[in-house]
Image (cartoon, rainbow, N blue to C red):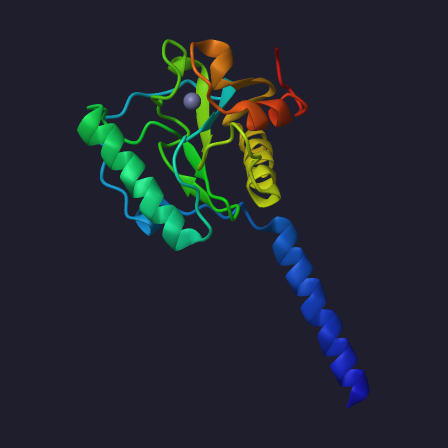
Length: 188
Ligand SMILES: [Zn+2]
């Protein structure tokens, strides 16, 4: 019986590790966070050459429920107040490391004036002028970028940029900007 248990445990461990290794990145879909339909879409040429990092300059989240509420409010702001066709960003990262789907990889976003055709926008929920994002959020963003390269949404020799490099803004906040300067493919 003990041999059986040990064999069974080993079997389960192998299955779990194989599943973890092969499973795709967990992304909270638009349906899961309760997105409104986009009013229009424009195609983005992929694999894209750039990925732009932002902060939302608003509240951060601690779980999928609070993150979904914030993401819905950002979509409402972008569509109702700014008159955009959809939420501006491609992905939104919560404080617990949850990744929320915004615009599709293959659609042009609205997050960096005059440069939206170059690539994707990833936003961290929160304000990161004085505090850094959580390790979970930073890891999620790096995993997402690696996934984008692997799935050919992003070129392997992509340029990583902070929003402030492209225009007059504090985004993505002093603390987050300092962190991404040490990430692979960051370009001054
Ligand atoms: Zn920004």
